[in-house]
Amino acid sequence: MFNLPESNIHLAAQAADKQQAIELAANALEQAGYVESGYLQGMLGRELQTSTFLGNGIAIPHGTLETRSLVKETGVQVFQFPQGIDWGEGNTAYVVIGIAARSDEHLALLRQLTHVLGDEETAAKLATLQDAKQFRAILMGESEDFHVTTDNLSLDVDTQSLLGLIAINADKLQQKSAVENSFISEVVSSAALPLAEGLWLTDSTVGNLKNELAFSRAKTAFKINGKTVRGVLTIVAKDDQINQTLLRLLDAQVQSVLLNGDAAQITATLNGTQQHVGQTDSATEVAANTVVGLFTVRNEHGLHARPATNLVNVVKQFNSKITVENITRTTAAVSAKSLMKVVALGVTAGHRLRFVAEGEDAQQALEAIRDAIVSGLGETVSAVPPSEPDSIEPVAMQSAVEKNGEIKRDENLPAGSIEAVFTVCNEHGLHARPAAMLVNEVKKYSASVAVQNLDRNSPLVSAKSLMKVVALGVVKGHRLRFVATGEDAQKAIDGIGAAIEAGLGE
Picture 1 (cartoon, rainbow, N blue to C red):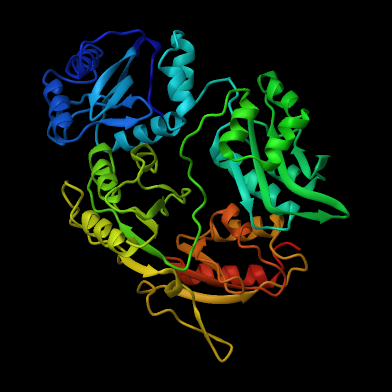
Picture 2 (cartoon, rainbow, N blue to C red; picture 1 turned 90 degrees about the vertical axis):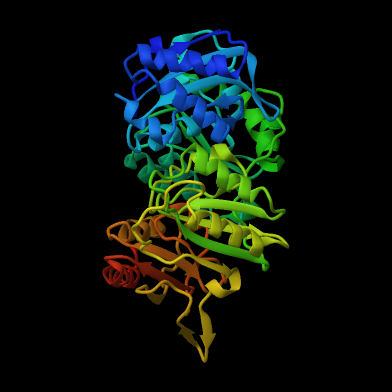
């Protein structure tokens, strides 16, 4: 977490153009002791190389690698221009964040900033907000204002398990650092409360760290003990700031939107605002013509603004729907055509990225992406060879092939990988509790572990993600294929096998 004093926030600033806005940021960085004289030239030089406009009215001017030696201490200076600054290429910046960062500290800093600013409504609020204390709280992710965002929604989940929906919500809330383990334990073990028309509610009296809400909705309604289940709300209530949203949940029209609306309609309804129409990411769907690529980032300084921009520009050349996830950090898949979201993946040198392309030019797209990454995306490439080879494969090639009832090893797996198939014997399959036990077992080992439900012909997904494991829809008798690579690969496979054989706590 970087330090951001309120004195580093300059509201209602004015500048004639982009250069003057950058000069204001550079002078403020120098006066605060973050950089030495001359850093301005680096910031202007960076802007000539690649625009630092991220999207959502946000620009992040910063220096070049050559001027990094002028940085004395990592820090930022934030300027708000309510009238807007023409940032070129039809883009207007309302919030300009001048960044000075030593080493790779800028990646963690950018990841934090883009995680907050990736929400369009939050960015729009910062463009006109006149309270420096509140501005800082929002930017640092410390705001007490409760606001529902689309990344806490899981719609059209292919499940017939109430506990599965609850587990998905719990995983979302845990990723947001909104709950403690005691919260997870209670919502998983306690009975959910039916509200109306298939809508259910779960919460906990313990482990509430900050106000949050997660909602998951099944693709089709199902019944539990004669009661209809369609969607589950999980509420984290730290203080009264969430009360207004809770009151909205009692409204029949709000409940109807939850059960039938899209992500934009749901967030607008829960936040009490008009619907904001915009592009949202959906979960990565695997189609027959989908192509998957696994690539290692070679840039010595990871995917900061410039190489991330170069990557996005390559992706935008193709018509295919393309998503990307950082499998080293086990992030969710996001649109590879969004600079803000690519930067927020927090990619450093050696991280593995998984691209999924779907469309007529999917193969060509992944080949171009691979070539761009291998060449360094316009920057110096690390001399250290990747620990795992890059690969581009149609989805069908990722599945194990059955022959005479046996599983044939996939010859396309990385060298040194270990794989095994285990049958789940739990009476009720992998609902929340046994799934959590499995994920906790996998996390013990220094290895990359993927899992596939052979009986549903699912794609390989990270076995360290509770949400993805639950989403496999495993019932009694299903066979799970695990692929492990890394130092503890064999230990991981042995431990997983033993845990499944023991019943995963059941």
